[in-house]
Image 1 (tube, one colour):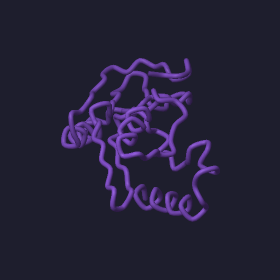
Image 2: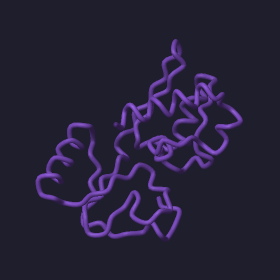
Image 3: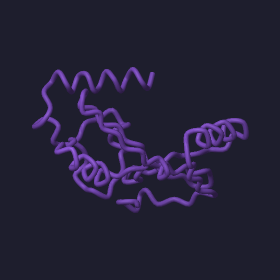
Image 4: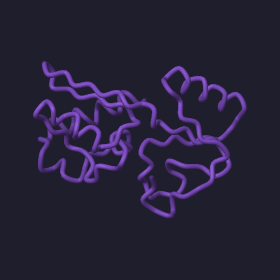
Length: 141
């Protein structure tokens, strides 16, 4: 699902890998063949060229729908094919809520962009926000 006409593009192929091994192979093949590709989680970004591509391979993470909650550490993990609504519904069974997207139907791109949700200032203290940003930077670089 796209929220903006600026995100509409026409990929030559859309691949939805069933797991991380298939994703790894797709990335290796793309690199070897020099095929341009884009990766989409929920695809809600309005930025041109984000989460879509003209004339290349679009890799959809829709198949990555694992959900896990560790009550001891109060840590929630989500596959990138989930929407915020999937996560909210899952966490409700534990009596917990995560701070995330405003709309249930959007994907988790916000979580990979290194930014926090619009209302994080209300619900997260500065120490937690700093830890989240450091964790993101460590995993990306």
